[in-house]
Image (cartoon, rainbow, N blue to C red):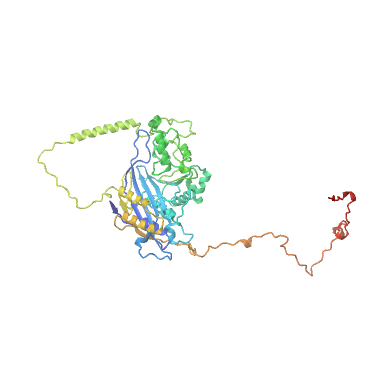
Length: 551
């Protein structure tokens, strides 16, 4: 079941100024309505987890496949080819909104556009514009907004066979971390605010397990170094740190799909599942602090043996922050020697309900009162029984849009929805179809694109075209052209020391004065130098001559 929303949701206006001028791109935006999901963070013992809603977004970008002479194919519908796919999950609770970049991949067929050298990458620009669009549309007043992702290099994520395309540029681990830092930099330079006042605090965070701070700093743009922190914001983005005297580390680590730190967290939970400390205080057996957690992450398979994984966050707050987590209620660290409560005790709330037992008793009392009221309202039915007329279903009704756009747990404005809104099951089927297609060659990629677009539209036409308006640098040679880039030749400016043989002899001038040397400055030739003709002959004596014996 699906429905189509108006295409003018603000995304088109963001994409036109950043795409190359005169080039056409096809945009396909798929999304789901907010649905109940498992909580991102585990609650402390004897506490309920946050009620969480999840919303999925998938953005695909395509271009027109062209021939060698750059003439568009006559059958334009069958010659579209996907060049980019991005999947984003939005988690909303009563306290925060979290935007998690799940997957991003390209096919490498963007090289068919033959863009001039020096043109900004359309893939990077589209990813940044899509993130800014969602942050602006999903912002809630006085609610923290978090953009989170992890960068781990892989040859292909969404498009099978695309690694065999020679035009695909596969980045290594270091290059991918730098690439995502550049993508998120515009969020720090010009934070999207929408109709609300500007953000009070915007800060980026980067953690690369196994690297020192001076090594991690090399991944960040130099112009924005003051806006980044080489640490994690897990204590800052959790509302538990403001409500409890101390919080176990497992309650501060989110549970994202296919996330390395989430897998490590699940393994630690299984290890300590039967321990008394887990039931009493919610703490692990081996890992007691977040510092130890990140130190052990450096030895995981995703972060060792030549591999590298970068964890990146951008945190938006309405109130001004100093970029550091709260000082009073914090997770106990190794350096902490004096504390009111020890990690072995059950976390206690700093305000509100004094204990979890009173809260449980209060809920039980409310249930008893409600049962008593329901019993009093029940009445015996009397009189003639009127049969209910059957309702005949004459049309298929779409229940996807029959939900409020704003609640205390989520915000679902019309401008932040996709072009097509589908159910959760239909969304999974459409996205997983990409994993069973082939993008190894251009012919296979165009056929796979046609099938995926048809499946996403469910028999109807969808998607819209965006024509770029960004000027390209004049005089830049195109890829594959015969003209070579101009090189500055500095060889004429370098002075080389000449040898004595190469130094030309100075010709004497007729008018130049003659320098006369004094008698003391003239060195005479010694008499020992005798010519070879006058040299004496050495004659051997009779005793020094050895005669040959007769046979």
